[in-house]
Picture 1 (cartoon, each protein chain N blue to C red):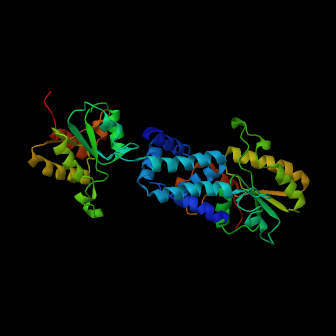
Picture 2: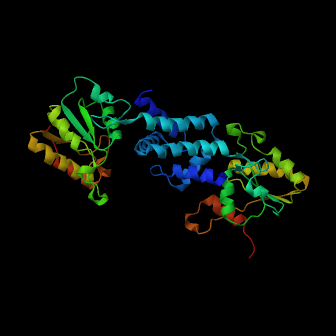
Picture 3: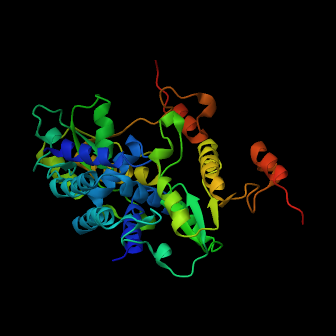
Amino acid sequence: MNQIDAMERLVNEFSKLPSVGKKSAQRFAYHVLTMNESDVRDFADALVAAKERIHTCKVCANFTDKEVCDICAKAKKEPIICVVKEPKDVTALEKAHEFNGTYHVLHGVINPLEGKGPNDINIRSLLTRVSEENISEVIVATNPDVEGEATAMYIANILKPLGIKVTRIAQGIAMGSELEYTDAVTLSKALSSRREM
Amino acid sequence: MNQIDAMERLVNEFSKLPSVGKKSAQRFAYHVLTMNESDVRDFADALVAAKERIHTCKVCANFTDKEVCDICAKAKKEPIICVVKEPKDVTALEKAHEFNGTYHVLHGVINPLEGKGPNDINIRSLLTRVSEENISEVIVATNPDVEGEATAMYIANILKPLGIKVTRIAQGIAMGSELEYTDAVTLSKALSSRREM
């Protein structure tokens, strides 16, 4: 393998990362060449270690290195499940310190254009959990876009007949934002979802 | 090492890459967790392989996996050295197919604010090359910014007394650009460096 190959191979690997183009990948690769050899080895080890140690929780499907993740394992949780699209959404919600139930990670949303149906995401185990864990409420916290809404509707349609309360996180103007710069769809949602003070 | 550690370690490694912030580093790390284990290993191998195999050419200091890089090794080159700041500048210039001499990579520029003087970059070996290789001209192709200009001046000052022709790549309006959107400094350079047609 000559220089061009080793370099091109690394550029190619970097350009597989989300929203990294050829130019950024080249910058990253050149940066790697300027790093200490031991630092590069640490980087490589961190990649493999993360992938080897981290898998999905057998209850909620969030990333964890245990059989059951820390959030699911913690005792005395409220009997509420918050459904999210991706593991990073769990991190974001946990930072809000508002929710004291468990999560359920779908690892995707229903997206007919990409050929993703309800069976391609982690919905089936949600049904099992709802009946086994004596859940009182399911909060659907998928993103407020077309696919997220469709997924929320689908989940509501299968859970409500089972007598489960299904709620959707509120949509409206973001804290600290200005009405002037808020888009029309968000404003219309904020108005129609107005609450009495 | 628990999940948070393995994840934080990987996020930390990614955030060392140039212009990668915490958010992008997290996106990259989550992406790695969704990759196949064998793909992650390939990525890690590519990192180590690039760093292990690629070092600097003993003549021009460009990155190579040989003792002398392909460009320096090629016979019948013009006796001209083009001085650049970084290895990626060599790639950019080679793509222009305009230059048929050899390169000299400084691995930096003179930058007093960052405490970088002439001895901290690869200038000394340029002097040796100029006398040993019977060089007729040195083109200084550092970037047209303050540090690049200062470095060009420094090189000109030490080489000219030795009877070497020292030139600077032309500065002016870029091909395909529009005068209307060209900054004032570039326009002023383009005017003062005008050529008779």
